[in-house]
Every structure is written in C-alpha cells, then in structure tokens.
Image 1 (cartoon, rainbow, N blue to C red):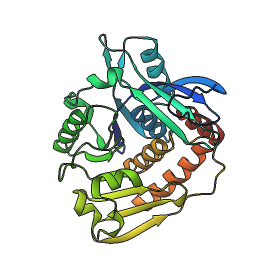
Image 2: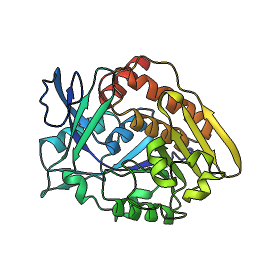
Image 3: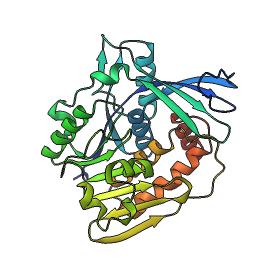
Length: 295
C-alpha cells in the first residue's frame, strides 16, 4: 500500500511586484531616478507557496487574483513552481494586487502594497481543500479576520496551523488557534512587547506551542514550551536583495515540516535557503534560480 503524501496549504496574498532598484530610499518630497525596473509575481502567500513547492512538497495555494493579465501571470508562475492553484479565487470586481518595491544597493527594501483582490479573499473555503493536509501556513497581507477564519476551519479538520504574522497583527493572537508562530524581531515585539527576550515562556505568553524568531544575519531562535531556546546560525552570504527572504524561509521550513522533518532540520534547511535567496535579485525568481542550480 502506497504511503499517503501530506500536503501544505498556503493561505495568503498574490501580487504583481513592481521592483525599482534605487541608489537610496527617497526622503519625503524627494524625487529619485530608479536604476532599473522589473515586474514579477509575488505576494507573501505566493512566494511561500512557490518556495515550498520547489522543495517537492505537495502545496495548495488559497488566494485571490483579478480576472486580468496579472492574475493569469500569477497562476502560470505558481503552476511553473509546482503549486496546485485549483483553490484560487478569480475576482471579476477587483484587480490583482500590486506591490511597489524599492531595493537599495545593500539589498534592503521598502514595500508598499495595494491589496486589490487580496482584500476579497475568504477563509470560508470548501472542506475538500483540507484533504490530506498536515500543515496550513497563513500570512497577513490578506484580511486578518479571514485568515483567522481559515485557521479555525483548518484546526477543525485536524490540520496544524502556522502563522507568519507579517504584517503585524492588529490585536492579540487568539489563544490556542495557532500551533507555530513565525515572526521577525519587530513582529514579536509588537505581540509580546520590547522585552520579549526576557519572557520565561514566550510560546505560552503569546498563546502558541512554538515560536520561531528570525534575526537576519544573526540566525534564528526557536522557542518551544518546556524546552530550552534553540539557535540556528545564519550562513555568511553576499547580500544582493532581501526581498522575499522571509517568505523563502517560511515556505521551506513548512515544506520540511510537512514532509515529516523535525524542527531543527526544518530550521536548518530554511535558514540556508533564505541566505541563498538573498544572493540573487527578486523573490520568486531567486527561488527558481536556486532550483535550477540544484537540479
């Protein structure tokens, strides 16, 4: 009898990224000339799903796009990565979301997002989407209430829930709704306060079983109930563009957990992959390039 393959559900945003490479971020009232401009499919949800699927993990994308060229391009890009796009909502009343990304010479970025169809994504999906799912990964470039609704439904179907709380939550995290919280230092400070490192039991304080805090070049810390803090160092890399590195980390980590890896191994894979993504321009385009080089 063949072993059942578990799947990862990704609930989140899908955007068209407009990327401007700039010599410096503009000050208020200042006009700068971009060094170059490019367009690509992005959005936290789409990036995470692509990164996961490119690891060979069965991945379904629950998101919304417009009935426009940007939506068609996004579906094609996701399918090229191996993502199951059958649950996608295509909206006739809203355009595909757009992200305007400035990338500075040192790889740092600023992002402004126009939500478009992401704003009409509903968490009330068909029960069939949860079939054979082990984990659901959520992020917050979509309506927060709908993400929490999807998390509730996933939990009812016995699916474990991971939340990449980015952008930051507007209020406290509902207790017991999320198994794994993935955040950077700014996001955990918003949830637990600036003294979060001094909290004796961080997962209990924010109402989850496990917390992963990403710290850029300083690596990653894993907090679990009743277990000492575990640290995974980051690899030394030549940073070209940090756009999508957090998404790469979350997608690869959840892909590994879905395939049955332990937390330490999943974190090791994700940290290494995010570092490699930073060495290339773009987000999803960097993931494809890594896969081509690994083939």
